[in-house]
Amino acid sequence: EAIEKGGFDHFMLKEIFEQPRSIADSMRGRVQADSGTMQLGGLRDYLDKLAASERIVIIGCGTSWHAGLVAEYIFEELARIPVEVEYASEFRYRNPIIKEGDIVIAISQSGETADTLAAIELAKSKGATIFGVCNVVGSSIARATDAGAYTHAGPEIGVASTKAFTAQVTVLTLMALAAAKRKGTISESLFRLLLAELESIPAKVEKVLQAADKIKEIAYIFTYARNFIYLGRGLNFPVALEGALKLKEISYIHAEGYPAAEMKHGPIALIDEDMPVVVIATKDSSYEKIVSNIQEVKARKGRVIAITTEGDTHLPSLVDFTIEIPKVHEVLVPLVSVIPLQLLAYDIAVMRGRNVDQPRNLAKSVTVE
Ligand code: AGP
Image (cartoon, rainbow, N blue to C red):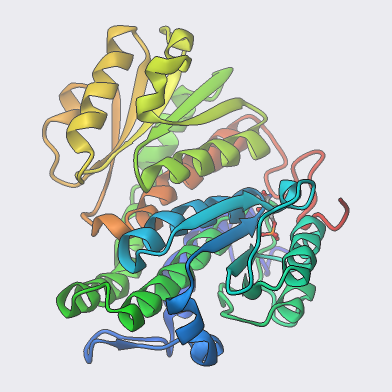
């Protein structure tokens, strides 16, 4: 087992550090930034159908559901197709409206999640075309879908999903780009820019990983916190949910993720000097808004750990701690902004003496309803 961990203390840490490679692997043979081209072999025959679809329903559970929420923003932004994201575990316990021509995208690392598999069967029976985004080749979900794209992240052993998430987001971004290109809803220059930006992601993730020691110092300060709040806006809102889920599942600290602007509708009542608040405050279209959300938290003495864009000289004076990430195109920011949150959760869990790779009550794949 020590050999399998490749010198890391836990599989989870190894998998976090593998992300520059696993993200690159998820794009291998699919993206040619130099020539401004891309292709997803598994979807070749279904691209017209995807581009013509009036609605996409994305299903998944846990981290895979979070990847779906990120994809919702990207599909709507680039391909202008309305997207709904559903928990697979809820989907079939109501009477979902699925029409002939609807596309359902099922996301699953393991490809064995019982809720997701059952939701696929229901959607199929209503005439939807099902695409899979799975990591495990030949898994039940991969076999149950009409078409799809594997994430190629390599085996994920840690119960807390890390590299599968970034690979899912990468592949879903490629799907959205392919649909946008076919529909003509993306300019050639933005298409090429995003392909080039995608190719630069592994190096940017590598750079964030170099901040591991700084993140560990911050984790040490908050090891015994009883609660955490995670805030983000736009594409960083699902990242806030994912950061909170990581912390919950491996450290057993209660954590909640919220869209930052929802604070004033309730959760702000929780803020006091004992409440750590992780805010993803990267320099993008919602930067000014999130700065004012941070001020609201600071005015109530909350302790803010901000994920900022390199070179931001304003936020360090406003917050308690900052973790910098390189500048990334807004559409791709979750691929980089999630990394410090994975490390923070990991470090806190280790410092609390938790069984990081096999947290209590959890299984790597949930094959029961
Ligand atoms: C994530 O860290 C989880 N342990 C869990 O939420 C997981 O993402 C969920 O059970 C879905 O699994 P799947 O991707 O294998 O379908």
